[in-house]
Amino acid sequence: MLSGYLSSMRYFVQVFQTASARDGFRDHLPREARVVPNPVLALEPNPQPEFVLPRPLVLAMGSLNACKGFDLLLQAFALLPPAAATWQLAIFGEGPLRSQLE
Image 1: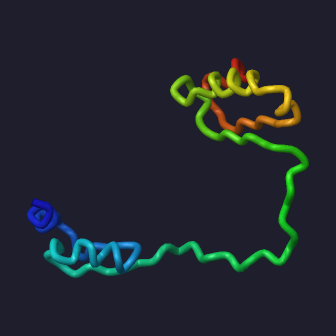
Image 2 (image 1 turned 180 degrees about the vertical axis):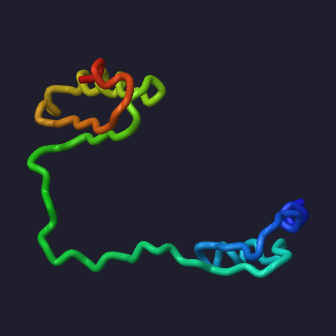
């Protein structure tokens, strides 16, 4: 079924990010397949000392709408025990619920 779908597609060449991904489909590819690696280069190890936060941080990021549940996160954060009083919550995002969440 997969080989039938792939052979019915109109393209010049199929592109994969890795050789192992390409090889996984090799038996189903009716045409040439090429590997174009991820353009993001691996970073060299950072010689600077590790950054240490002064207190625990809970970081949340996303669209500020009802389906993301940031309102539940705020409620749960408010219920943390006294031992977590120094914890900090940071929410980053934009959306229709921004004013309600602030």
